[in-house]
Amino acid sequence: MSYFAVENLSLRFGGLHAIRNLSFEVEQGEVFAIIGPNGAGKTSVFNVITRVFTPSEGRVLLRDRDITTLPRHRVVERGIARTFQNIELFESATVLDNLLLGRHRFRHGSVLGQVLWSPAVQRAEDHSRAKAEDIIDLLDLSPYRNTPVASLPYGIRKMVELARALASEPELLLLDEPASGLNPEETRDLAFFIDDIQNDLGITVIMVEHDMSLVGEVADRVLCMNMGEQLAIGPVAEVRAHPDVVAAYLGT
Image (tube, rainbow, N blue to C red; front, side, top):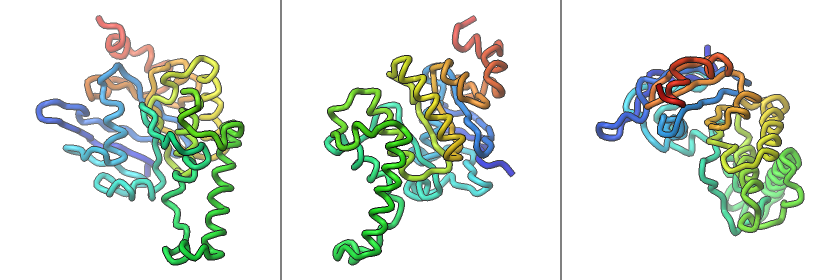
């Protein structure tokens, strides 16, 4: 039994194939990277998994259960969270408030209990705040806890988006170009954070990324795509040296 699998996945927009008959498996606890040139279909895979798009063919399986047609909010309830290429945060809210919004999949009591601020609701709120504070400490965001996101530099905002995804307590985390726009020092820090997410939190990570230095440092295995199809899959060094991968990046 595989932990997560994509089987014979295809996605078409009219006559355009964004994904073409793609299959791969991810083991629990693995950091799995998807690489490829622009337009390869990498983000489209994430959009199918998280139900932004419905595939033309194929299945998405989590613990051998078909989640291909789940409503979007049910995907989050199954323990899947993601970040985006373009930062999607509530910019007028503080860092802490954005993380608390990431706790939306957990019940905080009945509507009446929330109106009356019952003890059960207070306990749930305290628990969510404690979880958010743990993530703030993990990602070194303490100096920015009460700062509105709009006033933060780009690299910190990227970390806040990662923190918000972690606030939902995922078991599978999808990172869409997490190093995009980061400077070398921030990228090194991100590598340490991904290692902590994998080893300390026990979260499985699937990462779309162009920065091959980051991929080489954190990924256990790599899938290279081009034109919606698989070119190669395996250890990082093996995939980087594959002649089809070299041709896709550099031309022939």
